[in-house]
Amino acid sequence: MLDQRLVRDNPELISRELGRRGMDVDLTGLQLIAQQQRDLEERRSGLQADGNRIGKEVGQRIQAGADPKGAEVAELRQQGNQIKQTVAVLEDEEKQLTARLREELLSYPNLPSEACPDGRSEADNKEVRRWGDPRVEDGLMEHWQIAEQLSLLDTERSVRIAQSRFVTLFGQGARLERALINFMLDLHTGKGYREVLPPVLVNSASLKGSGQLPKFAEEIFRCADDDLWLTPTAEVPLTSLHRDEIIPSEQLPLRYVAYSPCFRREAGSYGRDTRGLIRLHQFNKVELYWFVHPEHSEEAHAQITADAEAVLKALELPYRVLELCTGDLGFSAARTYDLEVWLAGAGAFREISSCSVCSDFQARRSSIRTKDGKTTRLVHTLNGSGLAIGRTMAALLENGQQPDGSVKLPQALVPYFGCDRLQPE
RNA sequence: GGAGAGGUGGCCGAGUGGUCGAAGGCGCAGCACUGGAAAUGCUGUAUAGGGGCAACUCUAUCGAGGGUUCGAAUCCCUCCCUCUCCGCCA
Image (cartoon, rainbow, N blue to C red):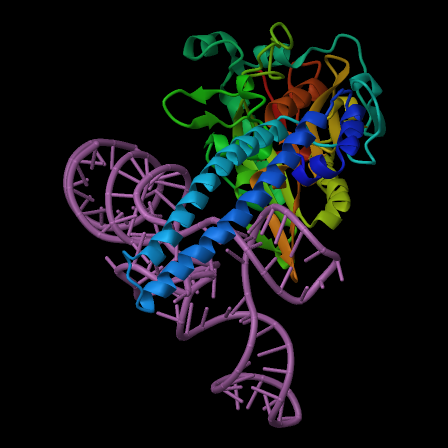
């Protein structure tokens, strides 16, 4: 959420920064609302002060022996009543403005970080570095073909159970999914992350807090009879873990790792990635999340990205790191590194993790502050996938496929999976 | 789902119409005492918004929202949540 004081005092800055995202916004209307709201508040609180004074005086006089029904008190009552009426009118007006202001403020994305490179679309993203040797050969299969051959999953039965874009894993497939979740959680907790297993149903306040609502309601599955939604990412419950809290500065940074299933409607993506594990309505993910002191978010961003990369390295999966340009940034992000894993069968890099610093955007929406000494400030939040499990499995299948139809797994997974190979049954 | 009890500051807890943002205690911070510490004493210690260079000051907030009143933590209404018992249940 944008800072309403910034809207009042420097709307040009907001227009300029949102312009870097490719948005053309005119904030003069909003600025006017913000100013009116402030003026109204000033008038209202002044009147309330008068009313309070009268109220006290009535009490004092009555206690001093004045007749509660006498003329003297009646006169004050009359004044009090008048003030009350005026205040009610002002308050009403003010509430409307405040609600409108907040609603508008919630609809704007975060301002990009100064360090975020300008650009219009994903074509302008900057490759930052690469790791590993991508396997490039003719005749390699895509992961869904391998999965089919090894009977790791069944899409048709999944349609029977749910609908398209759901997957049911079997045997070695189910086991590998479980192994990957455990492997990733252990890797991150080994570095000091606190493990969290949050609720998968979240309320709308939580979704507002992390930025999914009100704008992206059509992307989220909703429980019709309750104010509950299926979480699209563990980022949502993790943000709300500290909603409306003031975290003592000596406790920062707080670093959490959470496994959760994620649910997305993927509205408007018909026809894309329809086969396999890349784009599903339900998928598993291990998510990293930091609450940091605002002065340390830059280092934290480098670190959370490195922590996500460490998973790919441990799994011996080649990848590249892209820095997203302003035009490709997510709604809540100020700056983002995407990790793209090499898919040998598809012969392409595919996103497997997105590591973002959200500056104070989510913290303001969720009212998460920290306090050192006397000053209370909004914290900064960061999130990064560490990693998306299904896509990791896809990468393991494509990069580890062998001529004999088996799939070789990295050594790091052996203790979790039980052996170093997926075998045809 | 049914019946009952309750939601007050970081925590405990008092407060049933008046000067209450709220006694008291704990915790925490500072100061004094001490060689140092404990104990003790004193002082301070909520959040948000507005005004002010600042000291400071105004407004709101006692689960949330509405109402009665000159005045509400206290009375009324609605909702939410927690606890206990019963029912159901992995």
